Image (cartoon, each protein chain N blue to C red):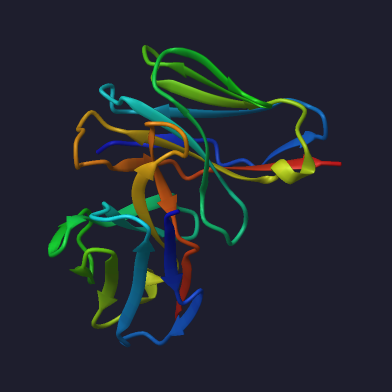
Length: 114
Length: 116
């Protein structure tokens, strides 16, 4: 059973601070890793993807991947109240082709306080 | 551009009643389509996926079923709903991230189903 684990939170940070969200996965053969943002009552929206070890930066967001530790994280710099949402970590396993299936974690609720 | 339509947005159904949720995609052909469910306190769970008309793969045993009668139409059904079927149901399709060759899942707006 492939599993993706996240701290459920809530994680509360003050406006302007760095928010750090963590995720671990069980399938060592996983190839692709994603972070989705989900506002309450809305559908998930992809904000970051990462495929190789190291850091990937996009604006205020940085995704970090360590395949040896089976760990992926998301850093949000200069957090804004509009960043308050649930962040879902998703992992795609080793099977490719038409079997594009993502396994999601339960999500971490982030609250950014003004 | 591609769009995904999902309805209804909210549904309240009694236990034992039937269910039909519909999802349609526009602007693409032969998409891979998915049904996910997000129950309270649980992560997004893949229920079904389809790579083409009439081709359905089930991920989790349950009293739900899916059908794909047309290329861009995906339907989730149940003959008799259970309390445990309550949740947020999301349809998704696999496409390319704008301006890249990277694939991503595009989600519909979802249906909040409450079984009472």
